[in-house]
Length: 175
Image (cartoon, rainbow, N blue to C red; front, side):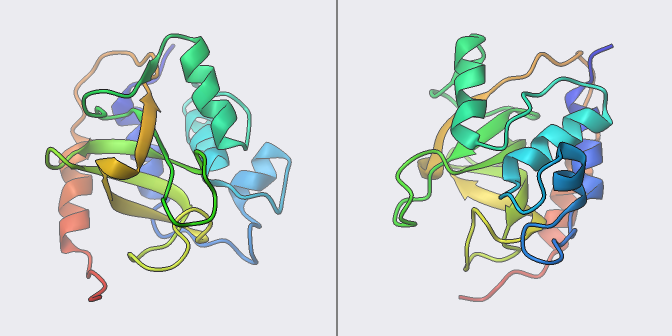
């Protein structure tokens, strides 16, 4: 049985606030079999695994993007949808390639997408691609390289409104 986007987001949302201890040592890496690795994509793999759903077993974000491309599930135009796997490049971070990934909760505006991400910072400052925690992030579409659309079983996604309400209540860093 395939998972729904709601199934995936429900598991991911329960992980919000999880912090690695120490650097890059996580329960996600333990399940993956590779402690010490950067874990944003490993987090996505783990979330799918909790739902008995397939996601490529690779900790390298460009490999994840390539997998969606090879399976005709890659998108670069338009806006990511709920449950899409969104790949990022953060200009100016010294890594000129896809270097981070998250699970799309929903498009909030024409230019902003809300995602649940592993191994990022809770605030807007600091290392966004190796920040050490699971957080809900509002990202500019200018940071998005593209996104993969998993083959979900169709169903409503009531968890989305709960995640958005939680995000809206979180204190934001004043910068």
